[in-house]
Amino acid sequence: MANYAEIENEAKRYLDICVDHDKIQPELYDQLGVKRGLRDKDGKGVLTGITHISRIDAFKMVDGKKTPCEGKLWYRGYNVYDLIRGLHGKRFGFEEAAYLLLMGELPNAGQLAEFSNVLSKCRDLPSNFTRDVIMKAPTKDLMNSLTRSVLTLASYDDTIGDSSLQTQLEQCIKLISVFPMLAVYGYHAYNYYVNGESMYIHRPQPELSTAENLLQMLRPDRSYTPLEAHVLDTALLLHMEHGGGNNSTFTTRVVTSSGSDTYSVMAAALSSLKGPKHGGANIKVMEMCDDIRAHVKDVADDDELKAYLSKIVDKEAFDRKGLIYGMGHAVYSLSDPRAVVFKGFVQQLAEAKGRKKDFDFYNAIERLAPQVIAEKRHIYKGVSTNVDFYSGFVYNMLDIPVELYTPIFAVARIVGWSAHRMEELVNVDKIIRPAYESIMQTREYKPLEER
Image (cartoon, rainbow, N blue to C red; front, top):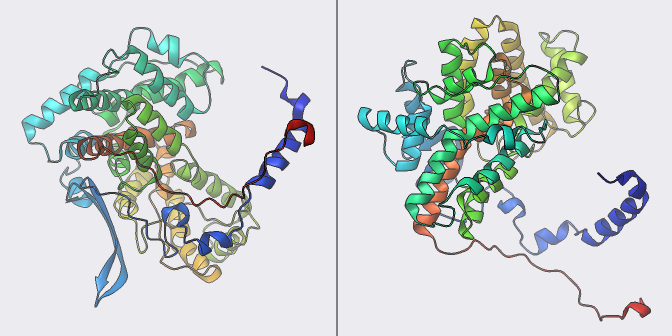
């Protein structure tokens, strides 16, 4: 690789020129009526499409006035609470919810068994793919590894040029099936070649659920408890879908609308998800909590904890960005239903793992952070815990390495991406092309010798 240090001074000069010519005065956005982030100032998203895959409820109309309410998340018309309650802690829900999102209806017993069998049969990579692709250029950035693997799989698909809906659905199902393998094998390659640890490549077992297979492929001894598998299954179900407006799902819609193939669409969605403002948020929560433990003598003391949270909000502590990670959401106000339902499973796992004190610590932050934010910030809606606040803690208790946190999010969310891709293909034959207002000034061209 070239020695880029030799051009550091030149690169700095280029950056100064680039930034100077790219700056836009903030007040222009208001003057021109531009919705930054495709959202109004009150947080409402700009309407860009229609879907019946899922819905998020964060407000309700009371006497003609928009009023915050407890959050609700619906998959194809079903409250996600009911989907999880219906499992009764005995069945795994990932496969059932995947069928629901893709097909639009809850499966009966026969349909569920058949669909689970299809997923199992598709959990197979091309010959030597693990050696020739995943183990080549291993990296700590497993989202990049996952994206590279997805794009390379396109080279092995003879139907890549077939634009029929049946082929698109088949490709989505195949990718849903192999995502756990691509993610876990990518970690093992990194752990072996970069960290110098032992290599374990376990094949998925056909009789196991997606959550069970993920755990048995990851762990050297392939063992896991029923509680561990069910908690991971719940996490996957809750992360599976979250409306058409989240960044990676909107990316899926945009790239699908251009006529691109399934593999390229999913690679684009992965690239969106890997950002710390989207899929990487739970990692920031873990880092923040480690920082709090390191600087607060007694994390069980509310006054000490609240004082340090105040420093974080005032940009005097942690990463000095003024954010308490895992708190607040672009849509939800009073509560994130995913966090509410997940918290009960988190508590069960914490008690089983002997980590009740850690759970109490997270619980204290959840209780105190909204108070601190309300005192320090002028906010237009309530601040509540989002699902990222607890998911990193759960993955830590499951001994899942931090490098896999976002890839596991992708293992779940590809189901939602697939559903939205199919809905876009079925209903819309128009490329998504929003408008940007140009404030460019025209200039007279000057020949090189006159510049």
